[in-house]
Amino acid sequence: MSVPPLFDPRLVPVTGVDSHLPKVQAPALQADALARRFAHPPLWAPEVISEPRFASRTAVHASVLVPLVMRDQLMVLLTQRTAHLSSHSGQVAFPGGKADPEDRDEVATALREAQEEIGLEPQFVDVMGSLPIYTTGSAYIVTPVVALVHPGFTLTPNPHEVADVFEVPLGFLMDPANHRRHTVDWMGAPREWFSMPYTDGAHERFIWGATAGMLRNFYRFLLG
Image (tube, rainbow, N blue to C red; front, top):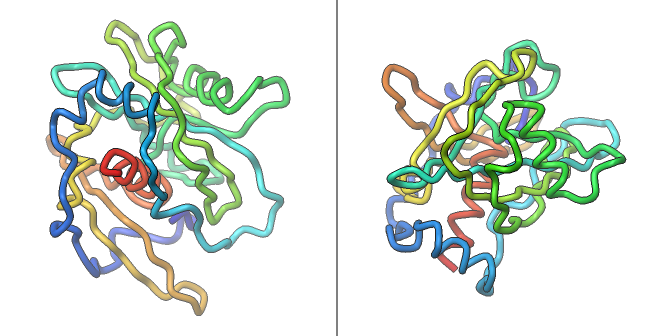
């Protein structure tokens, strides 16, 4: 869930781990298998589609790119947002942002934002499809656009928005043994979310909230 920056999700106790659920097997995580899945999607339902609102502003349409980098195993490219941003500061996120009037569609928004935010040029990106819309508590109506990213790209992160860029194995994120549940009382009402902490060398990449929710839906889509 997305909440104001004074909230520290790492301090909220874990209420459950979904290790009882099956993981997505390796053959289904190959690039060609994913392309076939998006070309012929199964009957399925997203598990997480919206968060309780805490922002009073008008809802804003946005897109994020879910970039799957084609290495020895597919890697999910993620960003660490800078600490001074007014929205989702310091959080792990997909590259993306709000739609501009000149954007043709949600895919165009995701590709433009990824290029502006981290310098990922569209010629390296093959879009496979989209996951269901996810509405954040901060009133963003987000379309996750899933794409394969061919090696050879050079990233130039926007220092105003991005503190770091890193990759996490798709297989790690599609294994529910790595999906943790959290619950906290927030302004008199319970709030629940997933986290998927990943240790990258000396860093713990604390993936949670909207990013983790969209990844959880991706898991359900591949398992469906």
